[in-house]
Image 1 (cartoon, rainbow, N blue to C red):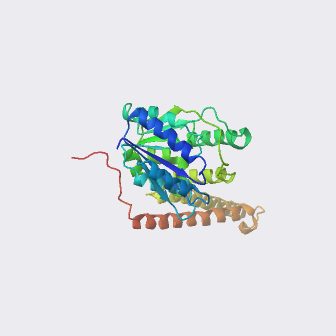
Image 2 (image 1 turned 180 degrees about the vertical axis):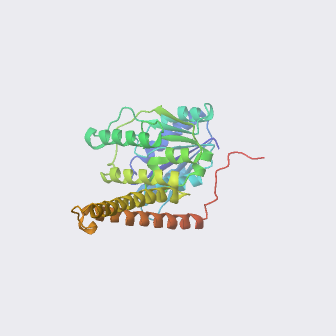
Image 3 (image 1 turned 135 degrees about the vertical axis):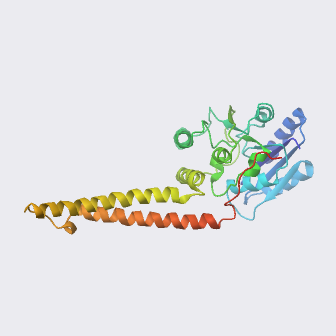
Length: 316
């Protein structure tokens, strides 16, 4: 199988026939052996009925239906698990991604040796205030924290070598950070291609303002898991040590200042009457709590069935 095209969807019944016909035309022009994996994320419209009809008309169409709405990451995860093509491409079902971009993405993976190629919607046809500006800020933040030089992490159209999608696990809203997860798994050849972005033709967007808050929280999760997932004590222990030493140092300084004042027959305040003492005490307690969190994290990591799971590139 040359290519698997994974398409997560939610209430996109109107766009599916047109999208499938467009993909058929591109696949036929390229002469690929291909499969279309349509993952219905618990749609409440007629999407599944349309997919069933498409499967009868097109041999290469495969359908997967969730009992309820789980989210785009879950749909992609299941689609990746079902994919058998040497190159796996993803795109959205709303006709805003162009199937005409797939041949060049496929070429970049198969001929230029990229592990992952992400689309870049350089010119967007979305509301500027609600999508364009927040998207630029979001992408700049992810570039800054991860070091991966992509302009559009959340672009729906991407192409992967099959080992990439088989090596990453998606959950929650982690679909936004697939390039980061792939890089953490050791797939560092990540490229980018400017793609055409079309205006939405049918229906309405399924994402609201909450995606920005969730995206930031997920970024923190990805950074923590990638750097400290197998060694949580390195983070919590370092923070705990720093807080304990600062708090303990302030306490010793206050006690030393009182002893010096007594020895010099100077006026002094009781240590417990000074606000700085309670700040120091809080830091000491927080340091102890961070240590405990680190120990608990180490116990959880030690008990994990994946604690000794590593990505092996080659062996003989």
